Length: 110
Image 1 (cartoon, rainbow, N blue to C red):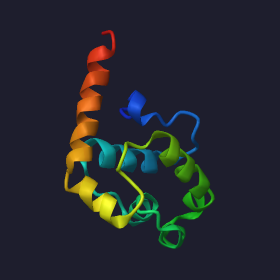
Image 2: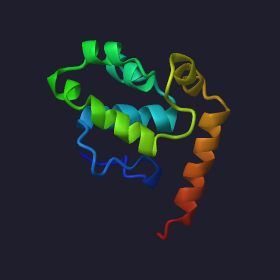
Image 3: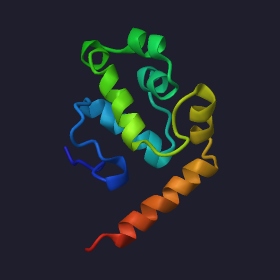
């Protein structure tokens, strides 16, 4: 599988997240696509909802998701259902993140 999420701003290295969750988060942050129920709860800061929707592997990694979000998630992209809806609606914070991605790509040598 091609690891298309190896963008510095979305660096998952050192975090034991499932491949499916990495892909879901990549699509949410990069394209504003709605993630599944578990990931929506994680992003919305809904611990009980996330725990009840998680499979065994993700349930034991909830603390890892929290650590990754705190350390790497774009500003105003997670934390409450309202913030998640805003990101999905491609609000000003989503657009600012898109500009940061372009700047990162332009700064990388080819």
